[in-house]
Each structure stands twice: as C-alpha cells, then as structure tokens.
Image (cartoon, rainbow, N blue to C red; front, side):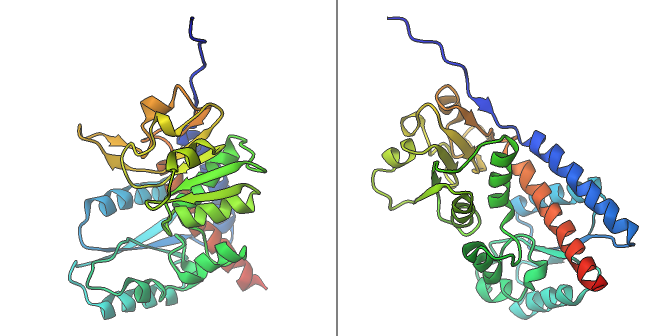
Length: 294
C-alpha cells in the first residue's frame, strides 16, 4: 500500500519575528530620542566563558543595530562577592543605565541567589530576580520575564498559533525557560504539563501535546517516537553535536516530516531572544521617562 505523501512542517523562522520586533523597537527608540533619552544596557560578565562571550557579542551587535547604548563591566573569574554586589549596586544607581544583563551561572564560589537579588527589579531585563519571577507567577507587571521564555511566546504570537484550550507540554523545569514559559502559556489559556528527568512515560506526555516547548538541555532528546502530526514544536535547545554543529533538543530531521510546525536550531528562538533583551531595555527606558514626566 502506497504511503500518503505529507507536506513537510512549516519552519518557524526566527528572522521573521526578529524583523517585526526590531521595527517596533526602532519606533520606541525614536520616541525616546525625541525626549533626549538614550536607552542603555549594562552588561556584567564574570570570567571568559565562550558561551557568555558569544551571547555578549550578539547582544552588542543587536544594540548597535537598534541604536541602543551599552557598557560592559568585566570582572575576573576569582572576583569577590563584595565586588560583584558593588558593581550591581553601582548600576542600580546609574541614571543612564536602564537595564542590566548578568551572565549566569556565576562561578561556584559566589552566592548566586544573594548577588542576583541585589539587582533592582526595574532594571532586571532578563528575569533573574525573585521579584521578576514572582511577577510572572502572580501575573503582575513586575520586572521582566526571562528573554528566552518570552521569545517562545513571541514566536507563537507572530505565527498566529492560538494557545487557547491547547495542551502545552514543556520539557525542562529551569527558571530560565521551563517554569516561566509554563506560566506564560497558562496566561494564554493553554493547559500545561511540565516534564523533567523524573517524569514517567515522557514519550506519551509529549506525544499528547498540541504545543511542545523543548528545553531539556540535551541534544536530540525529543525524537520521532515522542511526536505526532498536528503538533507545533518550539526548540529552545542550543547544543553542539558530535560533528561540531549547533543543534537543538529536538532531532530536527526526524521531527520535520511528522509535526505541523517547528523552529530550527540555529535560526529559531536564539535570534528572537536577543531582540527581546533589547526590547526590555527600551521598555525600561520608556517606563522611567513616563514616570519622570508625572
């Protein structure tokens, strides 16, 4: 019996979302500049981790493209807790800095919880403080959601994927993606399941989903046996495979012939994340400007 030919999945490209987002940011920057305000990002990086340097490079490029200023605060790997806290407090007080990006995880000798929560929530543009996270869980306008989780939602919105009444399964429970993404999808009226390393029958859970957010942090973790037709898959993973190429948490070549829509890696969530970061800085500058006009 001849197998029925099926159309390949729609590829949810990040560049389309980024282009639309960048246009919105440019309009906001124009408004700020009319009021003589230059939005500015403070970047705190400890040590010389290649992943941090690569993300910093992309963030700086995006800032330059969108006429947003930035300043780097580079600290040594063996930095003291006091020095990191002093740097954050300096940026809290800096009138010209509207948002702060702190690269994580911090070196193991530092108290990450204590240090990150030194940052003022108004300048927490990557959702790293407890107050920002509380805002997401309570549905309050407080700080900003982590940029990667926000990028997942922006992709769904851009491509007109309605979450209402859909079963959304998030694979991964980190505070960077899994937990905030689950709350943001819940806010969009999806029914949420969060899977993790201790989840039983994970294949069945993922297969039952209408929307899958893969944030397991493991290359090719989601394979064809996890998937079915009709699904939308958002792949958050950034891994390097045995050949040295970037790949996601989803085995793309296995998934694409099965699912209805999928984000590629690279070319999906990553680029959107960087623009979300810049958008948060610009929004923080707008909020500060409006508050000063009252």
